[in-house]
Amino acid sequence: MALNTALPVLIVDDYQTMLRIIRNLLKQIGFNDVDEAKDGSEALGKLKEKKYGLVISDWNMAPMTGFELLQKVRADAELNSLPFIMITAEAKTENVVAAKQAGVNNYIVKPFNAETLRSKIAAVLGE
Image (cartoon, rainbow, N blue to C red; front, side, top):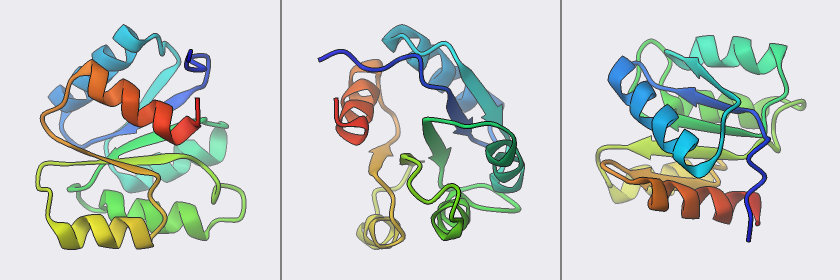
């Protein structure tokens, strides 16, 4: 099935290279409306300004981690149904469990390719 690639996507990572990689992968899949934030607090600001269809966030960031961002998004009445995918370098079971309990929609372990990203997004957006 076709993905709704017109949705605006917010990618959050404190590592510029990773932002570029994710943006390029999204472009390969067909997503062109992509904004970036360098940490959770910047992401929250952007989420208040614009209606996004998906957030893809790294776990390990400072000062606000992706996990804290997820908790804040889920606690916000305006944002709590926003599809949220977490990216992490470590596939620690307790992290996966914690993220699931906090309401993450899906989880991607680095490194990943466009096909992995596409299937995770498709699973989340129910396409």
